[in-house]
Image (cartoon, rainbow, N blue to C red; front, side, top):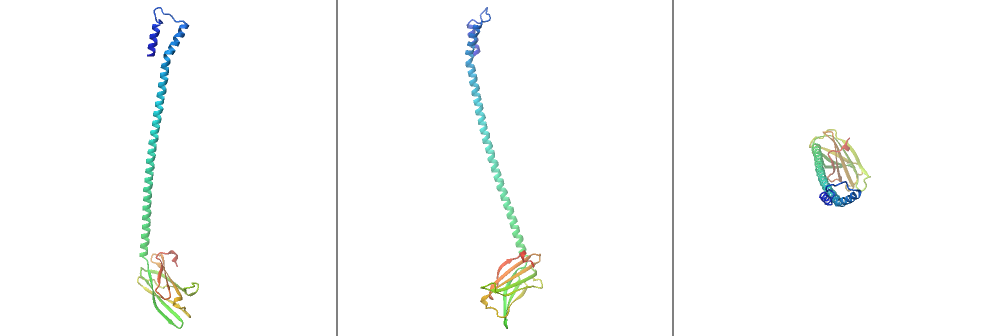
Length: 240
């Protein structure tokens, strides 16, 4: 439109009339100034259009960048949530596996304990003669066979455990079968102390049929019934 208007104005000014010749320098200067004035708004409009287009493109790029960042953030959140869920499931699986291992270990131990010997200790007769007191105890195996059994006992003063009245140990010569009983004699010679001053500890160490070892500890004061204070159906330190 600017070119058409400029051509029309130049034609009306007589520049393209018949017999037209090349214009002089002054005329060209005027024409150039005229064309410059005509096309300056077009240049400004083109520059404004370029600016607006660039601004729109920058806005669209910024919006696209924000959308990309939001999409990436959501993807990161989903990935983080998936990883947390995976870790939770893995932790639950590990806990379940560990629980199974613990349960299996307890089951195997309980099974091994059930398949070994077990002992009770009961008081028997007391025999006193010529300054000697014999306290008989009855050891009974209420479990399975015990291949070897060692019995040790110590009788001390209740008020002073360093004062020892009797300290002996014996090995049973034969395996102790299920429900079999053996007598143990605790002998106090010479001037044995009164009943209320005695404290007795009996340790029963045994070798099981499977080669493991066990330990039972009974204790009692005076001549009362022994009480089981420790029970270790599987106790490696009881080896002898």
